[in-house]
Image (cartoon, rainbow, N blue to C red; front, side, top):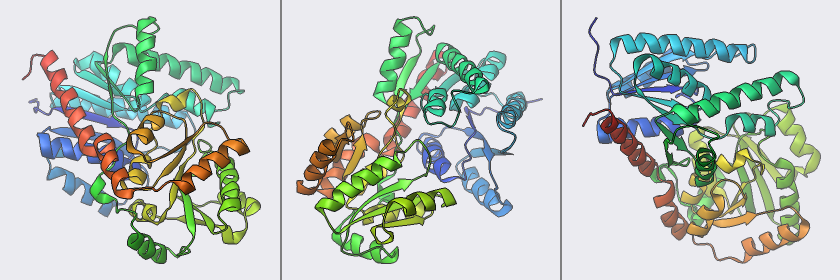
Length: 415
């Protein structure tokens, strides 16, 4: 059986038809193929994908010489369904290797990377562990896994062991923040992990041209389009309604802002509005003080331009050192000042761009100071955007991935 000379096998458990997959996977993969000529095969797991949508995506990718192998995401039962899908990923990977001479396996997140490690051991390809963050710790700290449950404690122990193995035996590690890189380098120094793999930092990026600047004209037009109060001072969270975000603290911040700006309005735009989200805000705020809405990924980029300030309130825990909020780049590209908790590299990014304020605690005094600074600053949207582009442009991420690919091929004697 002849084998084709494909360069990269990209493994992801996230679907590329989902908004996250389109912005944080496809934007890079398309750039790597279009700009640098890499021949990439993507193996992904998709939820509820229609045949027309699958055909559309496949056609678009084939024009860039990207092949897409889509598997169905198994939703239940918990844990078992994930293990079943990882087995499918492994078997599919073996079959793909039988007909393709992949030089590099690029695996996104922990479980696909473990599959990638087993494929590396079997076929000898180089492995990139695109870590994304401290996955097991985040699940415990956010409450997704109940740390008091013996089964979840055991699951945590197993996944941390897998993480340690991947950090030891991957050929290159990609993390989202410099803080995460420092933690892993310390683990290498302390021999908590073996090996000395190179580590690169690629934060969650965005495409600047996709984000309109928050000018007075755009604010007026988009507020009208989304039925938001035209003359209000609007702050907002655009993302998900999950425990990882500090919604109680957002309410506290908003109420303190309302004391100083009577025209303040809170915008919460999330992917799927459920009964819990409706009840949460209804129980805590007057109906006229907030807007709870659901918008598409494309609409959310326009909605950002309606804001006077964006909120990035994330739990401050061990795992948050490795966190890079996906909306941060979009907010800064829109020139919207950001109020954020001190996670990942946010403090450095906001200082470098002049694009916001970091909150270290939620005492009334600290919130009052932050709000006074927010309201007194003469924010310059164009300047924020221009300073953010060199740090968070998808093109920069594409260039870093390209350099990693080239370095790994040099290690194997390819040019």
